[in-house]
Structure formats: C-alpha cells, structure tokens
Image 1 (cartoon, rainbow, N blue to C red):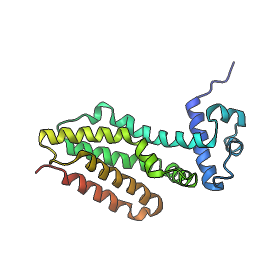
Image 2: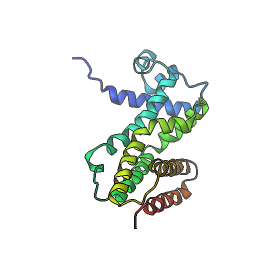
Image 3: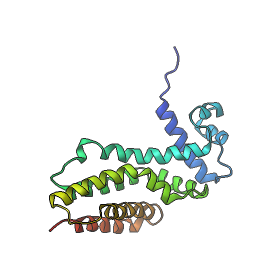
Image 4: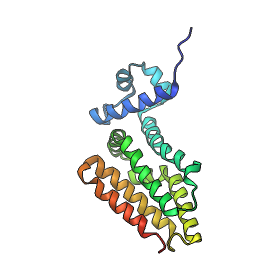
Length: 194
C-alpha cells in the first residue's frame, strides 16, 4: 500500500528547517542540499516543493501573513457595532500570531535582511489584505460616528507600524515589548469618537 504524504506538513517542515539552516549557517551556506539533509528528505523531494532557497523564504512570509488574513476575513471580524473593539482585537490578534511564530519570524527577518530584501516593502506587500480589512472597519466606524474623522490609511499605517515594532522588539528586546503593546492599545482607543 502506498505511503500517504501530507504535502502541507512536508512543505511546512521544509520551510521551518530552511529558516533554521539559514539562521545557523548564513545565506551563502543555505542550499537545498543542506536543507534536504536536515529534513531527512532527498534534494529532489525538496526541489518538488521549492525550486530554490529564495522561493522558500517567500513562502514563509506568505504563510505567516496568510494566518492573519484568513482570520480577519472571517465572519468574527465583521462586528460593526464595536468598531474600536474590532480594530483592537485585530491588532492584538496580530501580536498573538506573531508571538506564536516568533522563532520563524526572527529567522525570516535575518534571512530576508541577508538576502537584501526591502523588508519593510515586503511586509507591507504581504499585509495588504489585513490593511484593507482594517481600513474598511475604520471607514465604517467613521461613517457611524464610532471613530473620530481621520485619514484611515494613516491610522492603519500607524497601527501596522506599531504591530511591526512589537515584533521587532519582541524578537530582540522581549522585556520591553509590552510597552509597544500598551502604546498600540492607547492609540486605537484615541481613535474613538467621544
């Protein structure tokens, strides 16, 4: 009887291993052969999932951002009665997702930096759907009088910048990360139309 392979699990194993290999060995020594060896797979098997190391890192960025996007587009985020609460939950949930994937995020940051990616631009591109969802909620809040008039794109940019700051702080100076979280909550509360 043929062995049943869970392709998602295998792909995730390759990505997680690749990020560890890259963080441990640096960009020049991170290749598909070494990644395959650490995964316990053949190079050909890894190649079936990813044509090169670069594709692995792009998939890793997509994987982390997709976890948040899927949640924000679901029905639980469409509560129009408490816009400030919804925005706060979105932001704090982003932080929870970041905490859950922190070791992968740290390795990913190191990897993308070493590969000379425009990290802020890549993050902005990958979080576009989250930004769009937050903008829609804020616009609805302005329309219904729950949120004071503001430029929604600027407010969303501030919120996302604070979430990003939290991730970097948590990765490199974890003892101070809670300060960023507090500032984020205070900023969101300041959007409330009193």
